[in-house]
Image (cartoon, rainbow, N blue to C red; front, side, top):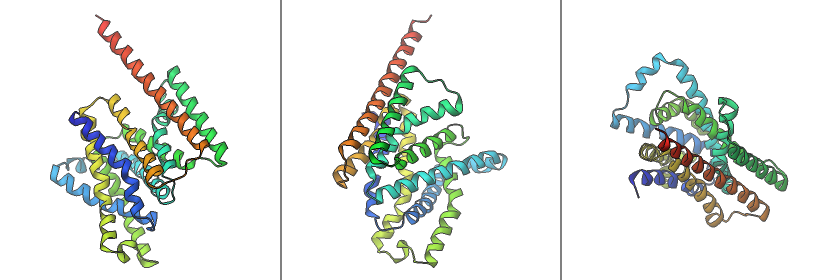
Length: 297
């Protein structure tokens, strides 16, 4: 196994097993968990950026106010993504949350078509149609819209779309996002402290430790992902990304014993079919392009 693959798998494994960590915090208000994730992520990123001596970007931001506005938008999207995921795990909906990250690549494809004018190949259109049919099936059988999966898929896809053209790298961009979110997180914790109190203030030392770990558990996989993305092709990274939702799905079924009725299982199966066809179609097009490039003089 190459170092790049190992780094990427490490990142996806942490993201995939994150529900186990969040389940250990059951009973804690999801908003408080989110606030602590922001606060301790900022502390972790400050230490990392100081250690790596990557601070020159801060001065450059003074001359790019539009970039800061873009990161306000990405901060809002990542907040929605985190909060929905935390809520889903704490309410026994980990399987539904994994659905969002399975759907994310195809949702990104649709957003690229709608917002960036990117052309879809016939095979990609077929995959999107299959995905839409699966969502319609899940909605019809459950009698309710699969809002958890779609909220996670669209918030993360829109986040990726905005970050794609952002002027900062992954670490610097994430540091700016948590800086922008920090006042809101601190204000929420202060408001809770004046009311019913916080789990951090009233909880045990173990509970406080778990909440502080939210920072490293957010920053470390980001570092691993960045290291992996620099070392392996994007196509291989795209295949490895399904490690995270697969681990989330397995955790929901076999660790948390969440119900998976036949109708939902069929919906998931159709989504996996769409993803398999998407991967095969991408691999086929890539092989053809490589073949044409080698044949050209």
